[in-house]
Image 1 (cartoon, rainbow, N blue to C red):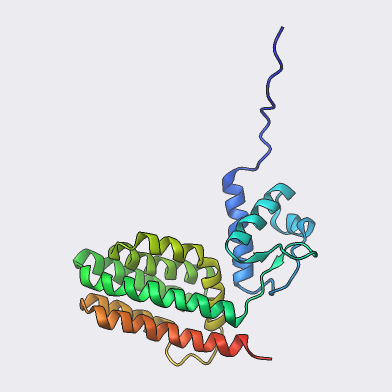
Image 2 (cartoon, one colour):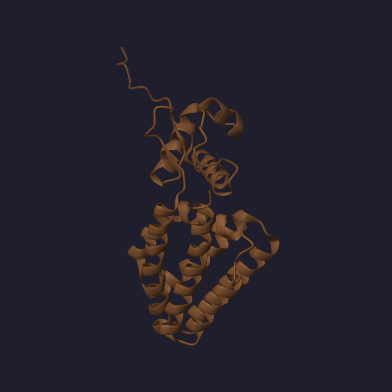
Length: 225
C-alpha cells in the first residue's frame, strides 16, 4: 500500500510572474498613477495585473520592503506617503554614497571604465529624449552602477539599490518640474566628464551639485500646501 505523500502541488506562482507584477506596480507608483495614501485593494489589483491574490500579496510585501507601500494602518495596504523629512534623509544618504563612489571611480577609471560610462551616458541621454519613464530609470541605474562597480563600492551599491524605489519616485517628482536650473543630462555629463578627466574632487562636487539641485526642487514640491 502506498504511503500518503506530502502535498506536491505548487501553491505559488512562478517567480517570473511575481517579478513582472512587482515591476508593473512599482512603475505605476513611481509614475504617480497611485498617489501617496491611495489604498491598494487586493481584488482590484488582481484584475488590473491579471494575477492571483497570492501573487498580489507577494507584490505588496516586496514593495513594503522597498518603502513604497505602507501596511501599518487599519485600512490595509496603501501607497506610502512621500514627505520632505523622508526625502531629505534619502538625499543625504545619496550625497554621501554617490559622491564618494564618483571620487573613487575617478581615481581608478581606466579606458575601459571611461568607455562604459560614455556608453551609459549615451543611453541615459537617449532615454531623456524618448521621455519614457521606465527607460529613464533603467538608464540612470545603469549609469550609477558603472560608477559604483568601478569604485569597488559594492556594499554602498546594495544600500542604494534598497532605496532605488524611493529614489526613482523622487526622481519622477523632480523631473516633472519646470524649475530645474540644470537639466538631468547636463548634471550626468558633468559627472562623467570629471571621471573621464580622473579628477576625484570635481566628480564629487558634480554629484553634490546635482543632488542639491534635485533636493531643492523636491523640498519645494513636497512642502507645498
